Image (cartoon, rainbow, N blue to C red; front, side, top):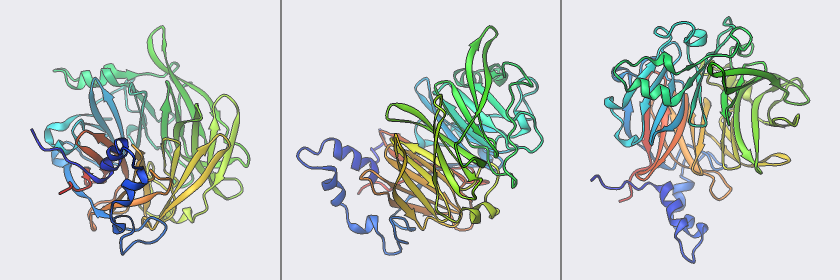
Length: 420
């Protein structure tokens, strides 16, 4: 049996759970100050330092992961965990990440390829730029295309995994069609620069940031089986949003909230908090030079600033060389801390298990906001090799792992080094 790998962040959580008369603060302060404020820290809890992460596994082109890997979503299906990797015109790669540190060529499961699936079970828009998992049951793939009438493809995950691991591997049986083709369609053109395509969902509903509005749809069982139906677009309040680039969902005070990012008619970049069904939307200004990142070549359809991640009443929002951390309240968002000096190409953030991961240029930075003040605790840079475009967090009994979409570098798996 392989030895248990203990990383810093899981150790904090486990120690807090069984610390007797101690407190989480006692555990936190038992670590040296340089872990959280290294000498090259850029200030405000960010910076490029902390412990140097170690890369424990990777999958790239020669192992089935082709194209430019842009975004990632995770799902648990029948006791195993799978990563779904958006790879543009190469489609959506499926990888078994049940044990992230053991990922190898045998972990590659299949690829949902635009060139293989044909109408009606086709990849809408001919590419996959963003992905979302809804209820561990549905996979929503989104293309950013200025010409396609529909850019959304939906799959039944249990059927998809069953087909991928069978001898026939006919993935079309997992396809969930629109209820009324042509009517139930979501065009995702992106904004004027082609930025957008964010997608998220819960309880059978999903939301798509088309670049110009927040589209909504729901998946339901009809007389012909599972289908998805377009709902009216969601209003983001006043001032109106002229661009909408990303969306996240989460439960706040027992109510599911939808968060959407973009630019308002008054010229401010902002995040709207919406309670579906109430018509109530409150927007919060993101005070940063976001346009700098939008104009950078690294920002494309599916990868852009104002990227959102939600975890346990905390919303993370990427901006220019920083990530804003907001507490979610019934009244809206409240800024709790700023992770600064993350990098000028900060376009990705992921969160889970009280931790966060940031993708910025050729670097991955990770940390925790467990005590209400976000801190970078580790980082890894791939000098001049990869551009980190999407990040996710996977917690197992072996530790906390950070999964990074490295563009043409495929999927990289990182971890805080094992304790001596």
